[in-house]
View 1 (cartoon, rainbow, N blue to C red):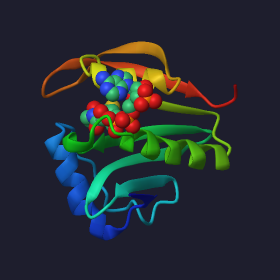
View 2 (view 1 turned 180 degrees about the horizontal axis):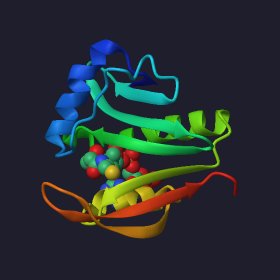
View 3 (view 1 turned 90 degrees about the vertical axis):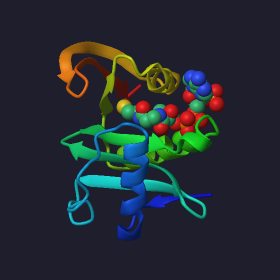
View 4 (view 1 turned 60 degrees about the horizontal axis):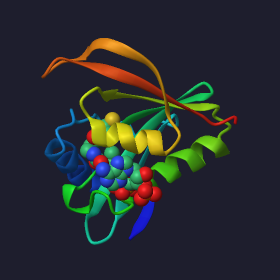
Length: 142
Ligand SMILES: CC(C)(COP(=O)(O)OP(=O)(O)OC[C@H]1O[C@@H](n2cnc3c(N)ncnc32)[C@H](O)[C@@H]1OP(=O)(O)O)[C@@H](O)C(=O)NCCC(=O)NCCS
């Protein structure tokens, strides 16, 4: 199992994982030419999971993050998340931000276990289905 930057051959499997995990799938056309965007995969024979994020001044925003259902709870998510933290620290980011559906307790527990704090609730942030989002932040300066 290897965690590395994604390449164009990984995109099909990344979108397949996004769809299978009920996430709105992202647009990855410019991810390899945009120096403010990052996409990492955890791969064995197949892509097991991925994380995408972008740099906005001294902040990082996680855009999409998922692992295959079959490997959930086996440490793949943590490995991917550490890649995000390493790159964020290397580029002097001060914080990592994300939004997560209020009902997504599994992901919320994951983020809390990694040190994220709830900042606020964004009312009716999501559609299809409509739902509030929790805005969460990890402070990298402490
Ligand atoms: C969120 C997600 C990426 C986490 O990935 P994962 O590979 O399952 O997570 P890991 O196995 O690496 O990490 C598990 C950690 O989460 C924490 N955790 C909290 N609740 C847990 C649970 N019910 N089961 C397992 N781990 C849990 C633990 O601290 C655990 O760390 P530990 O092993 O040191 O105790 C994964 O659940 C997922 O793909 N969910 C669907 C897509 C999604 O919701 N994405 C987020 C959108 S904002």
